[in-house]
Length: 168
Image 1: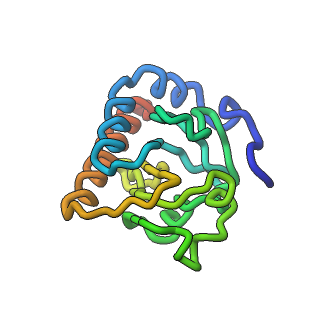
Image 2: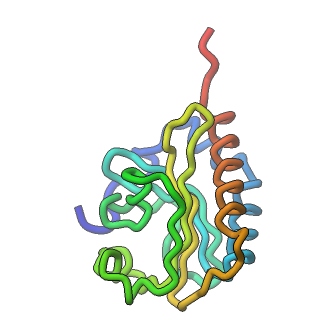
């Protein structure tokens, strides 16, 4: 698969789309992520078996990734969380042999990336909270990783609460 493939409505359940539409907190979290990281784009993505589905974005500079976009998961930086669910911070991707040739890096000219996995309270990997930029950004704040992990945990709790139907 190359680039955008299926419509998000085909990959997200009605409950997921409703939760995304109803939760204004995610936009505030994304705005805070851009302020704290100084990266100009922040987003929340869901993972399917093969797709990275953009749920919500804060993109004041029109980076070009929009809510509803889908990308082959293996082309993304966030795909690393499926193998190793640990925060990933990259200040200069063009200098990193492991990540510089990823299709999404080339497509959007990504130079800096900060991402953390979104783990639901029941332990399932939902997706990622990520921020990126075409500029080199140094991550000097020693508390930044923990702060983004707390935001991702909050997003996971919000989604879990709104997506799970209690069994009766």
